[in-house]
Structures are given as structure tokens and as C-alpha cells.
Image (cartoon, rainbow, N blue to C red; front, side, top):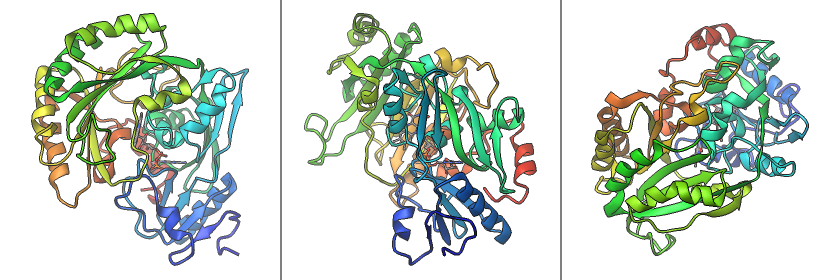
Length: 432
Ligand SMILES: Cc1cc2nc3c(=O)[nH]c(=O)nc-3n(C[C@H](O)[C@H](O)[C@H](O)COP(=O)(O)OP(=O)(O)OC[C@H]3O[C@@H](n4cnc5c(N)ncnc54)[C@H](O)[C@@H]3O)c2cc1C
């Protein structure tokens, strides 16, 4: 007996063997401190856990990977979805049905068996559901659009313990808000997501030395203006620490990486990238790779660490934005700032046939900044200074790239209709 009616998965309380492992996730800062962790194995377990919380007036949080953990629980019930990770691909309809705890690498592998690709992101370990509820900007985002745009149905347990199959027909308003502004409305137990034919891409990462990064940002503005939707790119720039585990050519240096992923041929990709390579000195090569290896282009760190970060959806890449990025959060910043600049547009800018809640979809760039949590207020202050400096060109923020304490305030993001749904579905604020 685990003490919770109708839960068949494991239940952990503080002091139990395995309790701490349930709380460990990719975000190493501010772990949840629940009274109870329910290791859900089915949607019935999720319903029972939510009912238990509602009956006892306890707050609820959900976690898969911990990539996007925001406000940590203090007491209450944490529903861990990691044990619910079944993926089913229907090759006829091009739909993937994924359970709540599925990570992108699992869907990518399963889809590849049928010559299909999902709208997955730069980290193989990110949870599909958390990513997709917040919009989801993938490796081929300019061609595939937001992951939210490709959702066909969501199975959701709401605060009343009911399991709803939410589609455009069954509950249009809830279906709209779940796709793009969906965190905190209940527990998703499964989703159906549309895949597209594909399998191989051309791409890679081109390195630009610190002294050329200003020129790179200028050139990037010009270059991205004329690209077809089939080419998605981004820049990541950081001062690499002078540590033995860092590759020698990066150790102790400020370097930007231009990450390129294209569904076009090698010749077309090389032709499209040539003007950028002519504008600034780059090292590295592009090549063909299976979509399943696309995340190697981004080389996101695999180990858990404490981080905080925020973002700005930009109306344009004004020269003053590039200056602020480097002057405030560049190589001379007092703490390490990892800068990201994603080129949006293309399919990301086109509204889906069934409306969703992705905000600022016509913004052509996404600026990201991230730092390690160091126990001081310096990272947050610098990120704030950068956000203030770029405010004149900022359309708003996107939920997925707000990390740590900055994510806890993610919902001043204005989403028409969301407050009404919160009041209707979760009047007592179980999920907040
Ligand atoms: C290294 C790294 C790379 C990333 N790359 C990308 C990228 O390329 N594109 C992009 O768009 N985003 C990216 N992100 C952001 C990522 O998509 C978000 O952090 C997302 O919230 C992660 O979801 P998760 O389930 O993995 O994380 P978790 O921390 O487990 O969950 C995050 C939040 O999602 C909600 N949630 C999770 N599961 C459920 C559920 N079953 N029901 C209801 N709510 C749920 C909860 O509110 C939870 O707090 C990246 C993040 C990291 C750390």
C-alpha cells in the first residue's frame, strides 16, 4: 500500500529510498520539495494523484526532464511522468502519439523507422510535452513551424480529476490555449503530434572567433533576410571556460557558433551559406547527417547544472540590439553569459489552420541569454539590463526560454482567454 488510493506506480515521501532521485532533473537549481512524489505509470495514476491533491488542498507540479522547472514546490504533490514514455507512430496518418514523459530523442528514433521527422528541438532529452505546451522552436523550425501548430489532440487531467480528450472539435478554446500557452492548466497524459516526411539534413556548426562576433551579428542580419524556409539557423556565443574538459581550440576563448540545419541539398546549402562565410572568417564544415543526429550541431550540455535565463522575441535585429548583446552580456561581462540568437520567420510566422496561443509569431528573431546560478544577483541583473536595452525592439517573450527564477514570472505573458480557462478549470489554483 502506498497510501494513495488507486495509484499503482511508486509513491515516495521525504526519507524514503529513491525520494531524492525523483527530484533530480536537468535544472540543478531550486529542486521541488514536495511532501509526496507520485511516479505515475498511467493516466489513471495521474487522475488519482490529482484527486488526492484536490481532496487535501495540496498544490501540484509536473516534471519530466526538469529542463524547464519554474516555481519549485514547497510541500504538495509532484507528479513525475518519467515512467509514461510510450511512443506510437501511425505511418498512414503521420501522427505520433506520445505519453507524458516522452523525450524528443525517443520520438525522433521511432519516427525515423517510417521516414518521418518530428518538430523536435536542440536537446534530445527535452520532454515533448513541456516543450510543445510552450510553443516549441525546433531544429528545422522555419520549415516545420512551432511544435504547437502540429498538435492534433491533448489528453489532459484537470483539477477535478477528469481526463479530457481535447481536440479542435471537442474543446476548441482549451485546445487553442494548450498549444503555446499550456503550462499549468492540468496534467497532460498524452499528445498526438503531426510528423513530416524526412530523414536527412545538411548542416553543422561554424565557429567565429571573438574578435569577429560584432561583424558576424551585422552579417547575420543581412544574410538571414534572404533565406528560404528550408534553412534554419541560430547563433550561440559564450566565453568558454579555461578548463581541461573544454576542447583546446575553444578553451579560455570567446567564440560564436553559427548552427545551420537545412533540408535542402548539399549544393544548395553551401550556396546559401557562402555569403555569410564570405562576410566573416569561419572555421568548421557542413555535411549531411541523419535527422537523428541533428542535435549534435547544437551540442547542448548533457549534465545537470543550475541556470537562469530569459528571452526577447525581436521585431528586428537593430544594430543597437547587437551592441547591447555584446556590451552588456558579451566577453567582458562579470559572469558568463551564454547568448543565443535564433532566426525565426518562415513557417513560424504563418498561423496554423486551427488557431493556437503562440504569441508574437511574426517576430523574426529570438534573443536568449542564460547564465549559471552563482548565488548572487549578478546574472539576473545583467539579463535585466539586456532586456531593458532591447525593449524598444521587443515584441514580447516566449515561455520556453525562461529558466530558473525568471521562469516563475512567465505568465505576465498576455494570452487572451487563458485567465478564463484557469478560473473555470482550476478555481482553487491547484496547478499554480
Ligand atoms: C538544453 C536545453 C535546450 C532546449 N532547447 C529548446 C529548443 O530547441 N526549442 C524549444 O522550444 N525549447 C527548448 N528548450 C526549452 C524547453 O522546451 C522547455 O524548458 C520545456 O519546458 C522543457 O520541457 P520538459 O518537460 O523537458 O521540462 P520539465 O522541467 O520536466 O517541465 C517543464 C514544465 O512543463 C510543464 N509540463 C511538463 N510536463 C507536463 C505535463 N505532462 N503536463 C502538464 N505540464 C507539463 C510543467 O509546467 C513543467 O514545469 C530547451 C531547454 C534546455 C534546458
